[in-house]
Length: 256
Ligand code: G
Ligand code: G
Ligand code: NA
Ligand code: MN
Image (tube, rainbow, N blue to C red):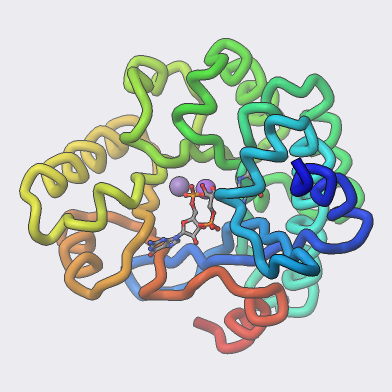
């Protein structure tokens, strides 16, 4: 309750920060983009995880202004990096959308405004929606996704494999990529059922012409297996934890 009051002021007090975690192409371990991940730098409690404050922001509706701010930051940061590092024009940034944002009628307007103000090309902005948020109101999600695709943004289905019945929606959702939930990657090298699951998703994605990003890669054994299975993109602590904007730009400079 106290925390909700603090969260109301967090934006104007500049306490919300955006961290960035690399997306990596498995073939050559090259950096292809970043996922924007929110952090709350609370003056007394220190760094508060989004796992804690995003649900609070959703309940209170504060996710709308907070989400809008994260989107603006992510677009502005990436556009600046593209300008200062012209050899890396294809870098993308991926922003998470909460269920409450999807229900918000002016979301599309906010997204277009972030793109316009930053000058970022729509194809360099990816939006991530979890399978479960999508299922909250699948018809609304489909309608929104169709409109976003018309604006040429990229769409990712996040935490794939953890929700329900989304398989039946896959052909109706105009998405570009699936992110396989990290719970399937965690034991992929020791649990045959997890490995089969990932293999099945990779082959389904190939048929549907969807890209696949495997989340939560922490060990080289996982990477080796994913490479052998034909996965194209990965993300995880093995490559980089979520880092500050300054550190993210260092990664671009190092040309990884
Ligand atoms: O960064 P971390 O692993 O602590 O994130 C925990 C959870 O919070 C993840 O499920 C992540 O998707 C979610 N999250 C992080 N940043 C954002 C954000 O900006 N918007 C939304 N909706 N969720 C976020
Ligand atoms: O739900 P979402 O996929 O957006 O979650 C992103 C969260 O996953 C981030 O908070 C990030 O810190 C976390 N994460 C990213 N890579 C790894 C990893 O390799 N291992 C673990 N345990 N968590 C990770
Ligand atoms: Na995500
Ligand atoms: Mn995820």
